[in-house]
Length: 505
Ligand code: GLY
Image 1 (tube, rainbow, N blue to C red):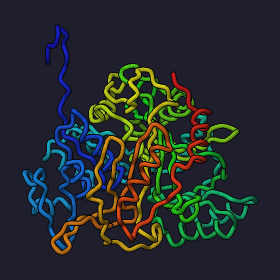
Image 2 (image 1 turned 180 degrees about the horizontal axis):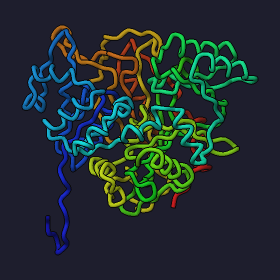
Image 3 (image 1 turned 90 degrees about the vertical axis):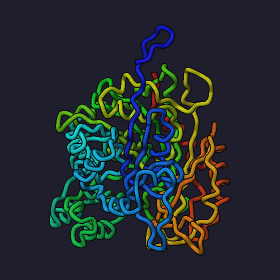
Image 4 (image 1 turned 90 degrees about the horizontal axis):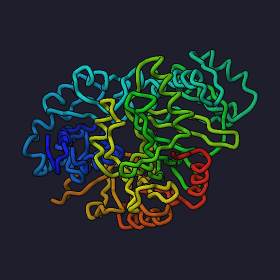
């Protein structure tokens, strides 16, 4: 305990943090954690070379390209040898016991889970039983994402509006439901986790038949598609709404921000559905100690939902990510996720400053109401925050040509190393690997979505201009990106949507 000016203060505990995952969302999490005063050592499993080079996170699970074993960065080489690293490369994120062993042997205090699959496998349950703090829900609460049928039931019991639906748990039941459909489009969803590919908007009977065939006959989602939901198609404006939850539905919920993402691969919302080609967001009004809270969606949707989850399973901790649809007839919940979105995390997290490690720890340990360190990066010098004046953030994802269908990997991304992050612009790696070519180390593509540029600004148009300027400085001939992210039309409709449904007090 420290005594300063006659006031007793408690030192912030120094934390060893572990981020699970290795994509752009996890890069953004590592970036925020690396800037947290209370983060002592930062690990990511598997992480990536891009994440370790840019944030200093130790990524012992990084699998090096077979062309070369690059030298470990000086920070990494102190503790983890290449031999140990290759052993760790085999750690399976879906094996809670392996993650617990890693945490014990590396004295991890706090685990932050990026993707949804480890949650469904019970990673938070195993860590909690071992006395390790984890910023993520237990599997029975994460079911809100891992079973869409359960999610719809919870929404309906909580009296929250969402599309009308029917459930088919066999091929014959699905075909029978389809025969009864008289109008299209309809939405067909796989019940389980399908890496963002389990939702089909079927515009006619043939498309619906194909969706059923792929899920239930070809079983392209495995057991996740053994049960299907048939939902009415709703139209309106989509909004992603993020809350931090500490397990207390009444006093333990804080608004993080709102975002909109772009799921289609091509400009004008054409092309196939992807994991997300870009996003834009506005920060939440966490300011100094007089933070304002969003009270409308929190009161009408978030709290009733959390109360029902607790009633039917257990209390909910971690991020709650609501996919909302706003229309003239009101707000509907389209989906509920138990984690940060990707690329939304790469758009929202850069808007927050302060000690995110201590905020995540407080949420994990059920004491978010005492936590005051996280705030908006407003830069406005104002203690009272006006949502309309907040900081704006835009992210654009650069992907391999051909994504999300077939695409080649292993192409050199020149100039990515020359990118300088600034207070206004960041780069996040998602599908890259470092290879040595003719004696020179260069990042190459290793996935569909490869890297993201994020920029902040006092308006969406200034943030957008910065993103596209940064993208034009990176020479990657085998990549593409959408050129219409955060267009004026989209940001205006987003603003009017926010004005319609959010209320701060
Ligand atoms: N971008 C949507 C998601 O992460 O689910």
